[in-house]
Length: 126
Image (cartoon, rainbow, N blue to C red; front, side, top):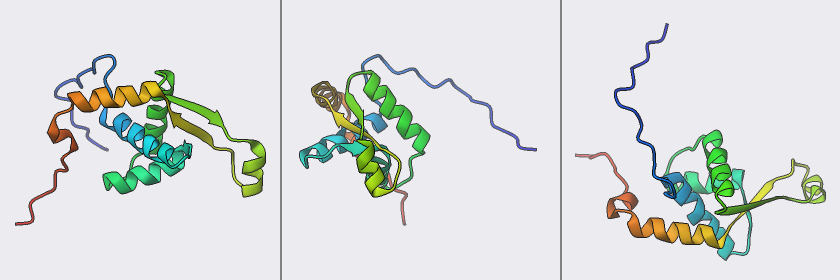
């Protein structure tokens, strides 16, 4: 039988209009891909974020964040044409692009972020 630790303090709610770190990372990656003239899909985004964040992101977590960003108007999404997926012999992909509102939200979030937000904590080797 497993024993779970009790939650000692509730997770603070975020203020309306703020982006969490994962959402910021999604928008940054989307803008980078957009600079290359591409829309992006969830699976490819997960691979990109895994390389940048040096760790795995649960796909459920990623897709929930994509849905939140789309609902907030920070991303647009369209399903790719079925012919493209059939030729590639794979399921259709949902393709995302960052909106101008998404760019503005990311800029505003970056202006309010502390410098420590972008720092990577690494364990001491000494």
